[in-house]
Image (tube, rainbow over all chains, first blue to last red; front, top):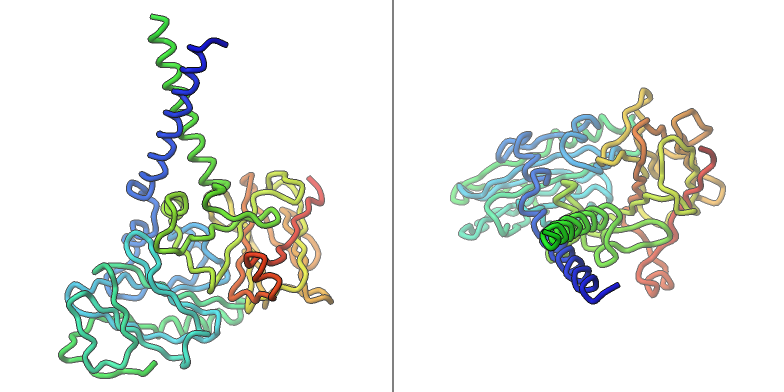
Amino acid sequence: MTIRHILWGSATVILALIIHFCAVLAIPLVSENDAWKRLQNFTKVNEMLIVNSVTEANRLWAFHAPDMSFAICRYDVTKGPVQVDFELLRGYWSIAIYDPDGKNFYAADGFDFVRQETSLLLLGPDHIKGDNDALPINVPNEEGLLVLRAPFDNPVMKSTVINMLNRAKCDQIQVETVKPRKTT
Amino acid sequence: MLFFIRFVTYIFMAILIGFGLTALSLSTGSGLAAKRVAGWKSWKDAAHLNADPYTRAYIAKTGQLPLPPNIVQTYYALYDNAHRRLHTSCTYVVESSAVNAKWWTMAAYDHKGQVFKNDIERYSFNAGSSMIKFDGGFRIYLSQTVQPANWLPLGDKGPFVLVFRLYRKQLSEAQVKNNGDVPLPLIKRVSC
């Protein structure tokens, strides 16, 4: 092996590492498969989408837990805060909020809440809570995803879970006209 | 001319190695981003706001919306306990002692992260749906053909991924000192 081969080999390894790091950094920017892009086709703004079948969940994202139903709200606080009302039947039910990059900036499960019925108020940068009793959450982006996850032990429990998810609400409200709904 | 051929060859090799390394680190989990515990891997910062670039790339590539580890800890297995790639043509038994968590679930997925469709509509076992052993643990059979007790049907698509989720896992003092690592199920190949 000559010096020339070693130089060419080293240059190849360095170039390969550069390509590797660039690819890793570029994937989140160019991926057409991320949750935000996928869910945009299936969700409406400030409306709950209930996902209760494995076939449906398979289309939405990879590695979804099959013994779980979901309520998803693609919120937009551009025109005002968004109030989310929901119930957490069991301690391991959870609610999580993500920005469009898929970064999770809020998550809680049933063990974190004192009451089963809970309300969150998603506030944009210029919004104030007013006299609303819902738990205020300042969202970093005007748009994002809120996911309520409801696991069930067996198929018999599934209908109860779906009924509870169907009662979950995701509505835009006007701060000036808001009236207290529920306490947390 | 020789220089040009050599130049093109090395560039081609660099591209191949660069993208190959990327695909490998995202599928098996880079040591920088994924924690390995007894054959299972866990993307430790999956739900972290300042997740490392590998984790961010993995999440974007797979389209997941992860939860933080204090709510659910997710473990992925691509290999059995003898480090052979999990494959749907084989039969496996997954065995665990009592699980110290509020709830757990185990499911098998194809290489795209989708559950295997099956006629009996069984896609997972969890703390409430599985038959429990006398010691409080569980034994789950993974196979294309019918197996006794907890049988999770596999599809006919080739390699698969096993995912184990622990909801609010409870740690003993010793486990806290051991970086929060808990005993995870053992995956044994029964036949192929």
